[in-house]
Length: 487
Image (cartoon, rainbow, N blue to C red):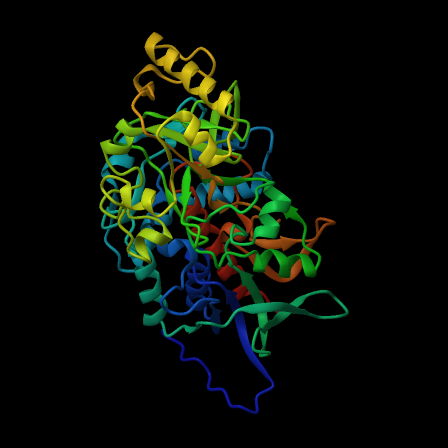
């Protein structure tokens, strides 16, 4: 039964509700729906306006990891964590909760089905134990992107009459001075809302905050694939009330191109030609550019490491330039802020972006070095060594697979700097299996919950659709637990 929001008057100093949800991406919507359905009076505070609300969920693929075997899923999650083990109660909550996601989204009135490619491709880490649990990627109507999932969630909130307030960022948590229990929030406009049962932080990551990215990831001036509204608000508010942190050095980054006038970037896919190498600031090639990787990590030299993990110059030649667009538009991959929110369509021959100065050009490698500031000798040596590997069909230095060894022979030559581009961060306030935020001494901060990428489950590697599934699982857990809590 839908609950109408209580009327407010201008003379109200403090508004009272049962549960406050901060953020309306996948986790925030799931928390709001669960709390409402459990009988709580809920308000959702969304930082952005209605046209940009939803955070990364709105511009993501909108697919979630599906499986039918919680026991094997738990094995897989443990393996993906490596030596960064998670508490077993969290593993169990995740493995059982992710099994229920498809049925839950269906219960919201959505047509749910498997995505053809991802359903048949299998796990991204097939060598790990438990990977056989991977049942593919499920999504609304079996189609990725285009905001389908967010539209379903937004409609579910609206159908239930849940009070959603756009352009209303929360800036501070209020607490009971005697017990430290979180009692509500203060908004940017100075409004005070008391949450009788709990506050759920679902504010997304910190990829939009350059200072936090520099501090925790060691990256400078990196573009963002999704929403730049993810500025670590929930992380900051949780820390202010004594929260412990976890997973702060974990992220997913991709090879991305930046429009210098924007913080948003474009995913460089190079699906038409693999004639490309990555070099560092010294001009030296440093990695297998096309090593098989998951959503953030790759197996390199026997270890699962972030890939890519540092700034690089991406170098290619005229043959690759003319082969087709190096960044996909919505008909190729309907994901990302620029593609979905701005409707940008990459030029078919890459010339629009080259002429705009996003990509540097040189008639020779020496000219390209001058345009980029790379050492000319090192760049020439890197290209020469790579071309020799292509001719031999073996990349002895980095082990790049023979089918991807396409030489750089045809001038002009091109390069752009990739930050790399951040898709999302994983770190934030530590929480338990009930999504309750934990203090630095390991105790529960009563009344405070976190879900989604503000506090991702994943301590290290993660597979396709894991983040949406995780957001739904712990968003639902947080909303339901808060609704039952006696303030």
